[in-house]
Amino acid sequence: MFEPKVPLIPLRPAFRNVRLMQIELGRLVLARNGAGRLGVRADALSAGGEISEGIVRFAAGSARFERVGLDEVLTEVEIDYEVEADLASLAVRIPAPGDLLVTHGRPAAGLFLETLWGGTPALLELGSATVRPFVTSRGTAQIACGWRMRERGGTGRVLYEHVALEEQPVERGRRAFAEDCD
Image 1 (tube, rainbow, N blue to C red):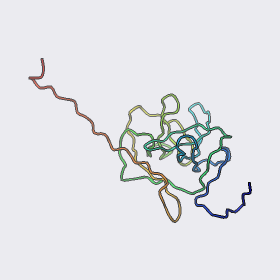
Image 2: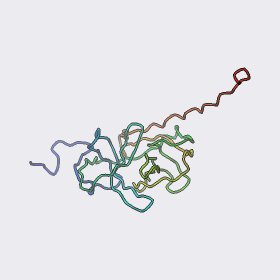
Image 3: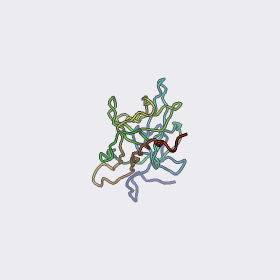
């Protein structure tokens, strides 16, 4: 099939079907299995130092790392983007998968992911596009917020948005009154 080097009908953003090994870390991809959801090319580094190649897939109210074979063909979305924190949703709470966390160590911020390694949650470091175990006490509150992925440049259109979950009100224990007690 003839395919010219310069497309006769330009498309923005451009889509390219390539093997995972040809996609740079941090680039946007469309995962074919599932519902063709948007994701980011990333590597995962376990606590033992083992590297897994794959993507971080975004879904409604969630984000998770999926291992993908280096020879598997994905669709790369050729677009420059940036992650923008939703400062209005900043809260100290137990994080949910997909939340942007502001941490006190290195890195300063990352995306909280569903568990990868035997129940240990993970953090996608934005600066390196690397997923690492996020070791903290279970149920520990963190500074978390929602975020948007915006096209960099003139339009600034929103490519994906993660809305932070509302903080759940804490139910107070019921108080027993004298007539209710035996």
